[in-house]
Length: 557
Ligand code: ACM
Image (tube, rainbow, N blue to C red):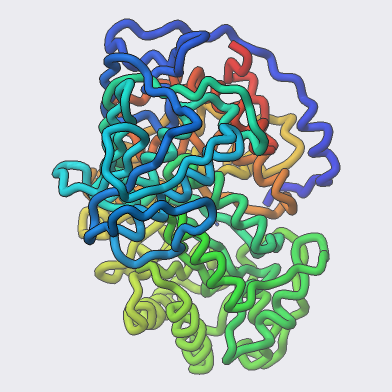
């Protein structure tokens, strides 16, 4: 794999000057796909990432004031006359009405610092203010929402709290970027008039974080979750084990973390999540309507486990810990019965920590496992995932050992052989659902160009435009559209060890993958997208996001 570069170079990277391209003018054909807000009024309703499904501009804007209230209604019988103050929101509510109230509190928490307004959350009915409404409205699905803005009120309705949550991300993006500030700004705080109706193209919109090559503490993961939520990503895939480190406590095999988690690429101290840490991440993600998909990569990418337990090795000898960046050299011992005790214990404990439906079992780059052994291993391990109530996800090599219900994640690229693609397509035609994450499009750790000081380039350079300009539905020949469950933006961390470095590779490419996952194909247009993307920058500046100023984006246009 690619060479590792010194993190200090990041400092230089963030100083790289971008060449600004002129802003592209509005497209005349639709009238609403302009991405052009007015200079002084509120930004237009379509100036959002991911692009909304349908937008109709109409009437005067809504203006927040010191008297604005946030009203919650719908769900299971809201109480009457209750006003909730700052910070008293119930977290992790189980029914719909507490879920709606939680979203209302999240909106208030978002808006209070910059506006300086009190913004009480109330279930008291009224015609003014910002309304968050759970309604039986058809057609929005579990994650869709409708935003109706008039001079008197802003009404956000959805079938489920997840829809309201995605809706407040839109509302947030429609307000001036200064709303992200952590201290009072002057405003005015206006939202353009009209109606926006929105729901996702795909149910599975994922980002992967490799916490194995370099360990990232809980707070770094939470910071990334916050960034994902802004773009309506609903899945966080955590790559919890690899050759360089095992990062999740497994009580029945304690040396996995105490030994296997004790280092990382380059030889740093590594680290791991206790079960309490992991539950904290899962809860934090759930509060932002993201599902965590944990991955234990097997049968290769297992040196950390093999180093921790001699009994897992065919020769009974534990190899040393590994801090380099090679791949494909390790393998669990497929003929050994103990291997399946290990897999059973790990999957059982991980499934118990996982409220979501999926558990990822890896399966990539098993170059030290024979084809027969790989198939035999996957044949035994996939049923273990089902035994503990989860649906297995595997990298697309798992289609060599097809099992009904298993989801395959395609990570090939332009040089992936026709036979390999055909195997995946055949599985898809036979009912395997696919998550599409082409390495030369959606891998956030691929360098933007030859000068990018971080990242790898084994799948080529992936510029911001290249990562946006493809279609998950047609990317793989011979795959029926219904087989595509969604998309993912993986972020591998051989060269990345801080949040600033993660952000430098994820921004500005991540919002483009989020848009591919959410927005209807008909909205897909690089020329208008890059204008919308540029307008996210003042927001990132206030959020402290360390983005790369790609010369393909008209940042100051
Ligand atoms: C992978 O990039 N090896 C899944």
